[in-house]
Image 1 (cartoon, helix red, strand yellow):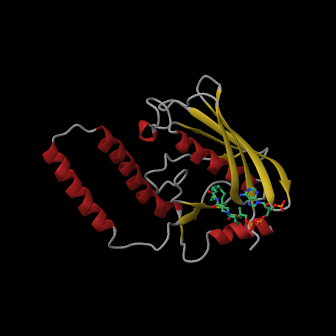
Image 2 (spheres, rainbow, N blue to C red):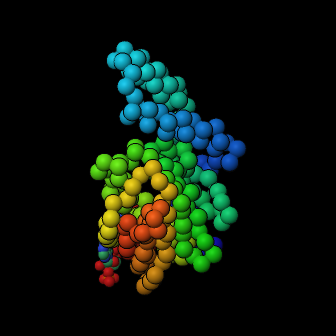
Image 3 (cartoon, rainbow, N blue to C red):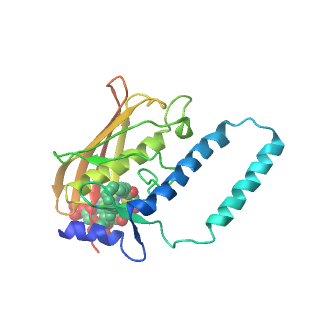
Length: 212
Ligand SMILES: CCCCC/C=C\C/C=C\C/C=C\C/C=C\CCCC(=O)SCCNC(=O)CCNC(=O)[C@H](O)C(C)(C)COP(=O)(O)OP(=O)(O)OC[C@H]1O[C@@H](n2cnc3c(N)ncnc32)[C@H](O)[C@@H]1OP(=O)(O)O
């Protein structure tokens, strides 16, 4: 195992238990239902009495789930490269209802790629994705590209050029690749492309492998 990979595995070590795919499935199904719940809460027009009943029902469910809790979000070895993945990631985490979640894959040329659609839960300007949500996704895939290069790090800089608004409710593509490495520093570039094939956002980030 390379030093960088060992360090990254260490990020997920400690009391974080790794789950198997079989263990993940029912909890991921619950997260899917909560994702639908988040959308329903935003859009519902049911009367006030029903809203109050729904709030009480959700509170009871939360209490039930909290009767057995982990100390930290779990991880799992998923996908072809067997890397440990954070299941609670706000971008890719199948157990995180605020994650779309986005399935980020590493291609043979070392770039990372994902095709995804965002609902209006992530809306900023009407009909468009919130710029901060796009930044979150870009930060993640840029970090994944640095890690795929064997040179992971903490985001030190993230530079975004919002060329045109990014629509929600339509298929989007995000790609990222490492372009340079100097010692502990790694630079990566990324884009988000809309369904018309035009780039909506260009991003560049620099990652630094921590000194200690
Ligand atoms: C093993 C650790 C890596 C962990 C990576 C995490 C996950 C990887 C796992 C899977 C990958 C898959 C997907 C990606 C997942 C997530 C991606 C999201 C990543 C994030 O969401 S991450 C959170 C946001 N991120 C922070 O929370 C960083 C806070 N910060 C720090 O943790 C330190 O600040 C650090 C480490 C950045 C530097 O600390 P340090 O002590 O190592 O730096 P030091 O002073 O030695 O400087 C050395 C040289 O870097 C230059 N330099 C330093 N800082 C700079 C900056 N900001 N801008 C420009 N240049 C900078 C100096 O000027 C000097 O330059 P020179 O050598 O040329 O003089």
